[in-house]
Every structure is written in C-alpha cells, then in structure tokens.
Image (cartoon, rainbow, N blue to C red; front, side, top):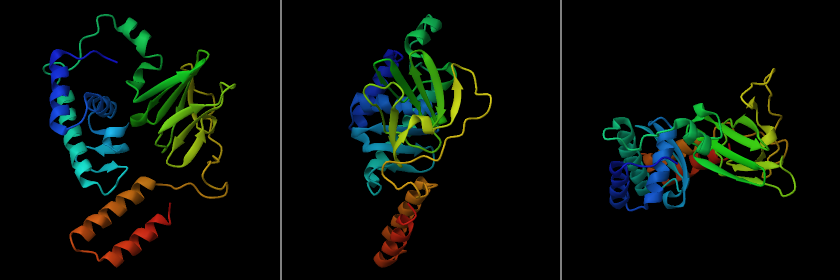
Length: 250
C-alpha cells in the first residue's frame, strides 16, 4: 500500500470525521475509487453495509437496498474521493523513489492491473482481485494465472486444505471454483486458444438451473419501483406485485 502525504492523510482524517466512519473505511473506498478510474467503485467493508457498487452520477447499490441514508453517504464520500484523486494537487501519495523495488515488494501481479481491492493467501498460494477490470490473479508456486471473473461480484476466496489447486470464491451466484473461469494469461502469456469456462455448477443452485444474466439490473429495477412507490406513483399492491415478478427472474 502506498504511503500518504501529510495532505493525503489529513484529507482522509477529515472525510472520516465528516462522514462518521473510520479512517480504514475511507482508505478502503479511496482505493476502490482509484481502481475504478475515479468514476466507479466496487467495495466490501463492514462499516459501509458490506459489499456494494458506486457509479459517478449514477446508481449507488448497497446490501440494504432501501437504506437511502447509507446510499447518500456513500455517494457523497465517493464523489469527494474522486475529486481528491483527480486533482492530485497537492499530492495524495508520497512519490516512489525506486518504482522497481516498490512494485516488486507489493505488486506480484501484472503491473497494468493496478491496485487490488482484495488480496490474500496461504501456504504456497496467493490471490489478488480487481473488480474494475473483472480480473482475479492467482499465484501458485510462482505460476501466475490471470482469470476473467465475468459478471461475478467476488466476496471472498477460500482454499481447501491439502490441495493448492482447490481455490474457490463466493459471489452473488454462490460458490464458484477458479478453474471454471476463462484464463486470460499464464505467466504473462495468453493461451493459444481462448480457454472457455465450462458451464459452472454453483453450490446453491441445481445444475440445470440457468445462471441469472443480470442480477444488478433486476435489483436496480426494484429500487426504481421503490422510489416510485415512495413518490406515490405506485400503490403498495402494485409495488409488491412487480417486485415479486422481478424476484422470480433471479
């Protein structure tokens, strides 16, 4: 993790105090906004309702979809962090005197992926997740494989004891194994023929059930319906009927 300048640390302290969250929560969102090039963020922090998404000038999604106060707080915080990162005057981060050494000690993944939102590992395996570019990087005994995470929103990665190749992760679709994902590259080299993921078998759904194509879109529609109901444009019965119809598509 990069070192903050005095200005950057003071900015984080100020935002944490004004938004009523910890410095850790603000720092987490700072890197999430940075990974989204200042216009979007995917995050997972317990102080901010767990996992969620933010888009500049667009929709903010949190685990508690009807918590409008939390949405407003996140939108304000992310907007200010986006402005902070775009100005860079004064600088938020300390300059790196030896970039090669810095990357070697922190970034074991390909440089173009930037800063990971989540990292971890055990035994001879480690991983890094990049939600903005839909990439998961896994290093097993020095072999670095980059996977395309498709539309999965990864919430955690686990490894079965006794097998370095049994990595799995949790997403909105349940438990998914890494070897079910398309391979982008191995040690920087793309596969000769694109490796297509086999039809995944999710832990929480029958094999023959279709995978939901766009859960985020369905939740967004439900949120819009809730807004219409709140404005008096939909009755309670109309909202309940439409909500049930949308939830059946999940």
